[in-house]
Image (cartoon, rainbow, N blue to C red; front, top):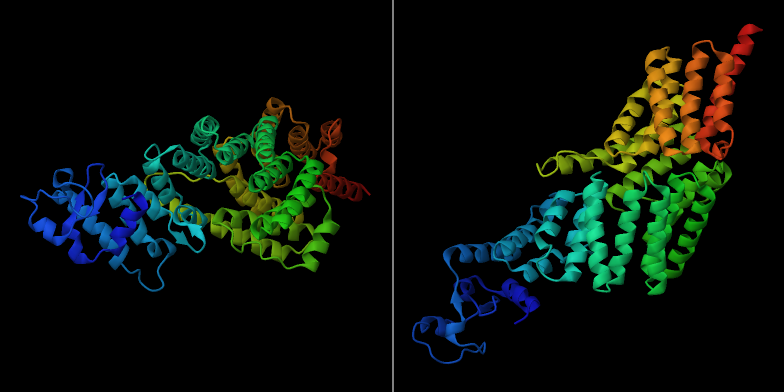
Length: 500
C-alpha cells in the first residue's frame, strides 16, 4: 500500500474502523478486517493484505490517539461560517501535525498539497501571508522524504526568510538548495535557487545579484523551462530597476511581458507590466505612465499574494504622484501600509519570529515620505514616514536604501531649521555612499549636505556640492534626482526674489 493509498484510506474510513488500524512491517498503516482482529492472538493464515499476522503491530494508545485526531480533523471538523482563511484550513494543518507526530511524512506531505483555490495548501499559506505556518511545514518535512521534497522545502524556507528580512538564513537555505538540485539534476529547483540568491544579493551587491539571475536565465534556456525563463527576466528587471539601470530594466520587463503573453500567464503578465511602470517612473517617462493609466484600469492586486499586493499598491501610489494625482497616490500608499500591517500581525502572533522586516515596506514609507516633502511641501509629515523607512533600511542592512532615505531626511530637517540633525544624517549617508562606490548614492548624499549648507547661508557651497555630486554621474536621468534639482532651483529662486 503506497503513501497515497494510505492517506486516502484514512479519509475514507468510518469511525468504527479506527480501532482496526495496524502498522505493517514497513511502517505503513493498514486496515485489518474485523474477523482478523478478533482472532489476532491465534491467527496463522495470511490476511487479505497479503501479510502475515506477525508482520502487523497494534497501535499503542499514543499512536491511536493521533490517528483518531487525524480522522477527526480530516472528516468531522467543519470551519465556522465567515471564518478567517487560516481557520478555513485548520483541519488540514492539524491533521498534518498529528501525522508528523507519527512520522508518517508522505501522508503529511500529501495533506499540505491539498488544493485550495487552485494552489497547494503550503503555497496558499504564503499567498495569505501566514509565513509562520509555512515555515513550520517546511521545517518539519525537510530531510524526511526525498531530495525533491527537500528542494521544495529549502526553496520555501529561503524565500520566506528573505521576505522576513532574515537574509543570512535565506542565503544558507538557497545555497543548500543549489547544491542538492545540481547534484540530483533537478533543474527547475536549480533555477529557483539562483533566483533566491539573486534576491539576497540585490540590496547590497548589484553585480552578484545580476550574475545569479543570469545563471537562472541560462539554466532555464538550456533546459527549456519556460516558466523559469520568465521568472528570471522579471528578477533581472527588478535588479536593474533597484540600481537605477532603467534602460536594461525596461528591456528585461519588455521581454518578460512578451514571454508572459506567449504563455498566456496573466499573473506574470501583471508583474511584467508593474515592472515596466516602475522602470518608467525611475526614468521619468511620465507620458507613458499617464497614457497607460488612462487607457487601462488594471486591478493589480487581483490573484496576488499579500506581499505582491504591497508592491502593487506602492507602485500605483508612486505612479499617481508622478502624474500629480496626489489624492489617489495617498490612497494607494495607505492601502499598501495597511497590508504591511496585516502581514506583521500574522507574523507576531507566533513567538517563532519576533521581528518583521520587509524590503518593499521600505519603498512604501520612503516614497510616501518623498511625496509629502517634494510634492506636498510638508516636511514634518514626511519625516514621520521617512524615519520608519530609515529604521527598516538599517534592519535589512541595505546601504543603498539607507542612503536614499537619509538624503531626503537631511532635506526635511534642513528646511525645518534642525541643521545639527540634518548634518548628522547627511554625513552618515555620504560615508555609506563612499563605501559603496556608487555615484548615484553619492550624489543623493551630497545633495542632502548641499541643503544643509544652503539653509546655513552657505549658498555657493550648497550649489557647489550639488554640481560636484552630479559630475561624472548619470543621476540627473532619475526621477528622485530631478526632484532634488527642482527643489534646489526653487530655493535659489526664492533667494533671488528675496534679494530683489
